[in-house]
Image (cartoon, rainbow, N blue to C red; front, side, top):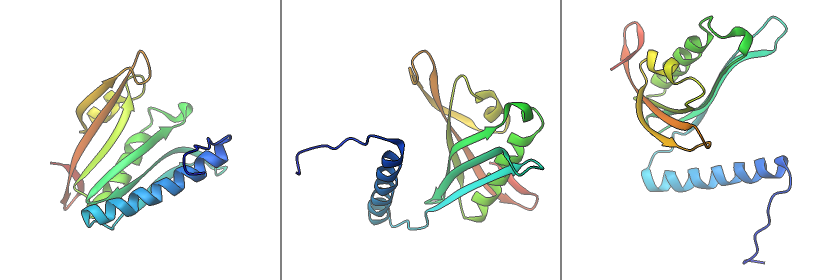
Length: 151
């Protein structure tokens, strides 16, 4: 029935609906902007056993790279893996023609880390989650002989 909402009852159904909506919104966005270069982006670091100990994912579209998740296992933080991940994402973004990276982090996660790597705080949304901030960052990229560097 057209006027009835069916709620997803498990994570599998929710993921399927989410993927379907992502595709429909991408189709709309392509028609509205003319940019049809959207591609997923991800990378990871594995230990000797093959387990992921650090990684990132997101996408590129319209000369912009959006990182959705950047994560390093607790036991491996402070050893440069986060920097390695971001540099890899930025390098691939430049190779795809991107001129900026955008990402969000919470106030209890890693805002200082991103700022040390040249990300500029654009704004923060207070109360997401309650008692914390959701902070949005942008970093401008340029091509240089030595790789990626901030503008």
